[in-house]
Length: 183
Ligand SMILES: CC(C)(COP(=O)(O)OP(=O)(O)OC[C@H]1O[C@@H](n2cnc3c(N)ncnc32)[C@H](O)[C@@H]1OP(=O)(O)O)[C@@H](O)C(=O)NCCC(=O)NCCS
Image (cartoon, rainbow, N blue to C red; front, side, top):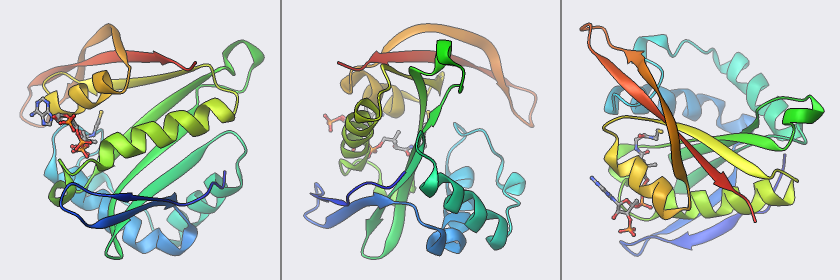
């Protein structure tokens, strides 16, 4: 889905643009996925599992842009991809079509500047306009920064999947399920 750009001023005074993640950014998005996967243990992918080709990524971003029920949003600072987030539908059947899922990840050098808060607000606004009634997400136990952001944005914890993540060293972490009603 396409939406209007939104400009915000970060805590360090720089300008940041929240905008559609377009196919032109395929190559930069692959670099971003590799970087964020390496910077935090709280995302689904290991860095070696980011195996998209530029052409494949371009296709995915093009499909997202034209899809009426989903969108991807990136944050650009000084021309760099500082972060990306998405709203995707839980399912197309009528009984679940009021539900959507949210995902967000920023490059570490851009944490703590207010980008997460601005993205959460804009995503909720757009999701509501699209007709969704609730947003759902999962956060890995121990990811205190993300959990604080979600609570600040109106999400509440509803349960957890034990041992949802298994790391290469054999350790596990639970996934906490959170939910926000759009109203
Ligand atoms: C989680 C993430 C999206 C947060 O984005 P951000 O831009 O850093 O967040 P913001 O600057 O908007 O602020 C988050 C809030 O959490 C609070 N916070 C920051 N660090 C915290 C910590 N270690 N513990 C508790 N709260 C913390 C801040 O006080 C802030 O609130 P405030 O602005 O009212 O002070 C970002 O850090 C990130 O991408 N992390 C890596 C990927 C990830 O974990 N994604 C989520 C997967 S579920």
